[in-house]
Image 1 (cartoon, rainbow, N blue to C red):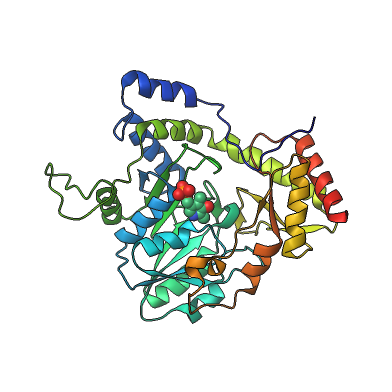
Image 2: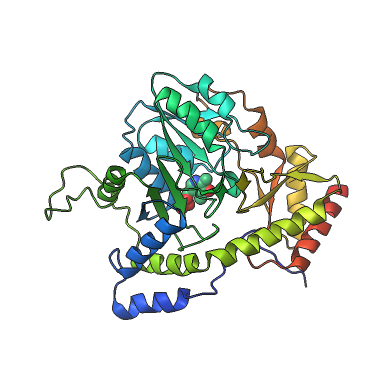
Amino acid sequence: MTRRIPVAAPIFRGNETAYVMDCLQSTWVSSNGSYIDRFEAGFAQFSAARHAISCVNGTAALHLALLALGVCPGDEVLVPTLTFVATANAVRYCNAEPVFVDSRTDTWNIDHDRLEDAITPRTRGIIAVHLYGHPADMDAIQAVARRHGLFVIEDAAEAHGATYKGRRVGSIGDAATFSFYGNKVLTAGEGGMVTTSDDALAERVRRLKGQGLDPARRYWFPIIGYNYRMTNVAAAIGLAQLEQADWHLGRRAEVAAWYAEMLKGLGVATWQCEQPWASHIRWMFTVLINADERSRDGVMAQLLDEGIETRPAFVPLHQLPPYQSAERGGPFPVAEDIGSRGISLPTWAGLTREDVSWICDRLVHALQG
Ligand SMILES: *Cc1c(COP(=O)(O)O)cnc(C)c1O
């Protein structure tokens, strides 16, 4: 019998079950309840931001942050082309245009040296994604933003607990957004969070996520808002995960260290290395193999036959049908290279050294076969 190793899986080893049972027994299952407050307070502290505002998912968190920062129809927002599609979709939800920027070979994150070329009078801000858990170079990005009067949102959906020059991601940009989808570093089933230390911005996010309700007057809606609220049940899971954050991050660091140790010197793959100024929390250990896209896909299929589930790197967004017509930006050689040669290997907190050893062994075999 072959073992099956998923590419990602959540681990519930703390108070998840007890807290969810408590929600049911207390009947607080909707979007009010003590777990919402405790999860938000705990996450604000974890991210070193003054405010953390929960919401339904990471995509909604991006939408809320963009709206609260005043993005209007026709505005442009600079976005790395190598990211999950939600980063650009949220810009489109505001009837604004994502303008794509290539990635850097060192961090795989948005190339700050290419931002200025993409700026026009309509540019309002930059979304810096901390791809696969490695922080973007925020000082360089914020220097460009300051010169041009732009906001910076950190899309930290993949980077809970990562640090940039000793600072937690989520506390650096004007706002940051997180996801608690089932395959993320910490999960709430589905869930999202906006963090910011700007009081007025936090207040706008809170109103927008709750139908625009004026907190001082019942049934008074001065603006059009959304129902983007998180449930107390999701917050209960999220809080229990957050209590175990050190364990989750520690296990992922260990798994990544095994991969690096076992693949080092074999010459079959390179990977996204941790820069000296960053901590990479390894949402995904993603390797670049020496192959074209078709043989990359063949290697993944062969691994799947052996019970090892992997994922291709993200398809750069400028290649997707809704975004192919984007006129500006580019060329995108770095993102296209990573997108066509990248494989995310199984990365989650329950993997053993034997699992990682077997995955590496099978990867090398597939590459040589
Ligand atoms: C997962 C993810 C999102 C979206 O989060 P959801 O909770 O799935 O809506 C946004 N951006 C990035 C970079 C992601 O990886």
